[in-house]
Structure formats: structure tokens, C-alpha cells
Length: 284
Length: 284
Image (cartoon, rainbow over all chains, first blue to last red; front, side, top):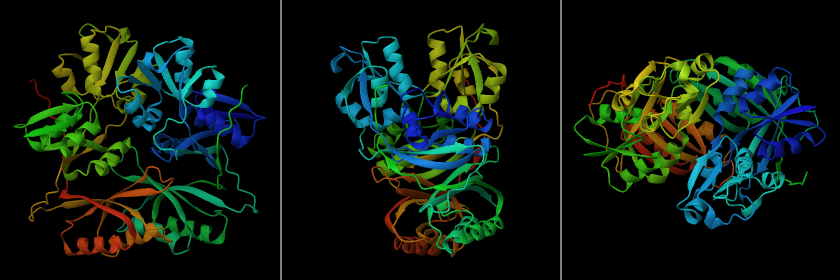
């Protein structure tokens, strides 16, 4: 099966994709998040996986937008514990380093480390962490390092100068698995979530009434995320994750009730609640 | 009065700051959003102004985080209509252009324009739009252009190759004005807003109950924004904007009621609702 993920080999997205779908698949790297959505929507890839939220940095908003635009469905999720590593070419020592390349989010997550250990060093943004490692390897840069995953260090055969350098040790990214069509979770799943997106009619206390639909039925809300509707001024779309399968009686009634209050409603998927994993690094 | 803003002269933030505070002040540019918060919190600048939300791209999350960390107060807001311009050195024509520099958000807002008119061109991210214009001016780049404001084109005496190139014409950024201490709006203000931040106790239907505090008192909610609490897993802080002055009876009671449900509460400010302006460009 062809599985799309964003970034290069060794990116956290690939580790999460291999854990989620199992290793016996054909994992295809795409440069941009949007390309992953497009490859799944067009059928080029059967499934895909993208990050949607990080415990420190928050939501990845463009992927919320892309979920709606691509009409892809969420078929599952997985939580990956993120560790950042300072990676350099052989023979490079910390005092040689003048520049550090990485994704802006990785740089932000290692801010204190960088400020303390490399106060004079220039940080340079890169579109993803594995590409940053690839760059310093390919150009054999002796005055530079990259922040990336352990897997990237192994894949590109690079030296690790410092491990787990992120400021906050509890650093987890939630990834969602995508397919073109929804498929419901097995009925014996112990824990199921559903995701929807809606915008509200212009009525007083609209958001309160929309949340009441769930609260009055004791349906737990996991997450609410608002995004501006493009070109409509400061009018918002709401992305909501709640407990349960949308085919269940309370959930089904809640959605029918919600539709009385919304001007737009779209179902993103019901899927098993994800597990938290630590990445497993392998020589390959 | 010293007023801090992020970016270079000619940045949208400076235009908004001049409109909000009036031209007879000393406007000081800072590289980073965080430096603006710090200069206000430390008293180096009396006031500051930063963008907080764009109608297309959504919230600027790091500024929500910085609001809380810096303990600055919101004393006002202003909505600025944003137009993007393709800017180059004299004698450069569209067919010379191989690279386009700008802030990632500006590049994203001109995606369709870039795809249609410059499908082969490399786009390069820069920390702000005015700095991108400054770069191509300073290095006298003949194969490059920048996306920036009309004011930046005027300030750096550059050629405008295309005007209002953003994909969506309704493109507005909301800026907030900051001071170290809260000051309440005059009692004769016709329209006042308040901003708070809180996290909820771990009780069933917590968010619903928190919103009920306002809904049951007919207090309009303008915006709700959730951010992860750093280092606490997927636990959230909520930023809420609502109608009215926090000294009013209903608002004051609502906050006392809210505190029964929250584990953390912080007041950000009551301030007059902002007006929408078009930028005024001037030779200077």
C-alpha cells in the first residue's frame, strides 16, 4: 500500500506513519503537507499521515484548513513523543558551530538550549528537520549543525552532539491518518473519537448552544479549534473532537441537534483513540 | 512617548501603530514580537503594538503566549486592511525574477498570484516583509523581488511591479496595543470589549459551563482561542474576548462565577472596540 507522509526519510512523520500503518508498506515522502492531502484525495496514495497538533507549539493550522479543502477523512491518530538531537558532520565540535539549521518549530522548542549553549550562533529556518540534516551532510558543512530526529542522524550517518535538547521534556505530537473515504471503527473498539467541522448561524449565544448539544448528552469534548472562514472577515469555522462513534444514538442525535444551529457542517471521521508511542530508531 | 512595534520602518505594524497612537510619538522598531512585549513590560517603551489575528491566516499564537508571559495589558485594538505589493529594484522586470522574498504569511496570502504569474520562481521566507524589501535594495538584487507594503516600497524608493496581489481582497489584520498596566476605557465609550485567559478545572462539561457564565447573562463572545499549557500535555488555556467593561455588573458577576470553574484566571484588559482603517502611505 502506498502511504504518503510529509518531509524526508527520517522525519518524525515517517516514524509515526510506520508505527501506525506497519512497516510492510510503501512510504512515499512529499515536500509539503498539502501534497500529502492531495495524493490521498486523488487516490495516488491509499492513505497518508500528517501532524495536526503539538503539546508545546499547538495546532498546525494549515492542516486543519487542508482537511476541509481536500475532503479527506480521518481514519485514526497516533501520539509520538518527540526528542530533538543536535546533529553535525564527523569531526565537527560544538565550538566550530556558527549556524544551526532546522524547522522553525524545532528551533522554537530548543530555545533555552540554544540560548544557553549557543548564544552567538545564527539559527536558520528550514522546511523540515530531516532536510536540514541532509543539507549539512550534502554540503559537508563544517561550521554548521542541524536539529533533527535520531532517525535522521542514523539515516544520514551523522554525529549526535547532544540528545533530547528540547526545553520541555513532555513534547508530544499528535498525527492523524487520512484516507479518501471514511471507514468506521470496529464495533468492539474500547475508545472511539469523532471529528467534525461547522460554522454557526448568526444567533445569540450560538457557540454556547452548540456545545450544549454535547454537554446535555454527557458527550466529552476533547478539543475545540477555531479558524477564520477565508474571505468572510472574522467569521469562524469550528473544529471539534468529541467522544464516541457518530453512529451511536447520543452522538447521532447530537449531530442532528447541532445542524439546527449551524450554517455549515462537515463530518471528518470516527476513529479509534490513538496510543502514545516512543519512536523506535533503526539502521536501514 | 516611546512606542514599540515589530519589524522595520514601513511594516504594517508601524502603519497601525501610527494610526492608533498618533504620529507625534517616537516609534521604535524591534526585530521580534517578543522584544516588543519585553520593552513594554520592562518600561523601556511606554506602549507597544503587535498583530494578533489575520482574517485569512488566523491567530498569531506566539503573541497569545507572550501576552501571558509578559503580563502586559491590552489597552486597545485596531483593524488594518492589508494589501500586498510586488516590489523590485529599478529596471527589474517580471521576466528577470528568479526569487521572491517575503514573510511566510505574505507568501501564503499571495499563493494563487505566485502560482499563476511566477510558477517557476523560488519563494524564500524572511522574518518580515519590510526586511525582505530592504534586503533586495541593499544587495541590489536584479533577479529578485519582495512582497511587502506600499509604505516599504516608498521608504526604500523601490519600483512596484504589481499591486494588491493577495488572493483574497478582504484581508484584515487585527493589532492590539499594549501597556504594562491596564487602564480602563472612558465610561462614555459606546463599545467596549474585555479579554481574559483561563484554564478549567477538570470537571465534566467544563467548557460548556464556562461559556454558560456569559451566555446566561447575554454577554456576547467575540473570540475563543485555545492554546496548550506548556509542559502539561494536551491541557489547554482559553483566551476569550467578550462584550463590555469588566467593571460592569453583569461582567463582574460573570467573572466571579467563572472563577468557580477555573484553575487559573488572568485579566488581560478592557478597551474600546477597534475601528477598521485603510493604511495611509506617505513619503517621509
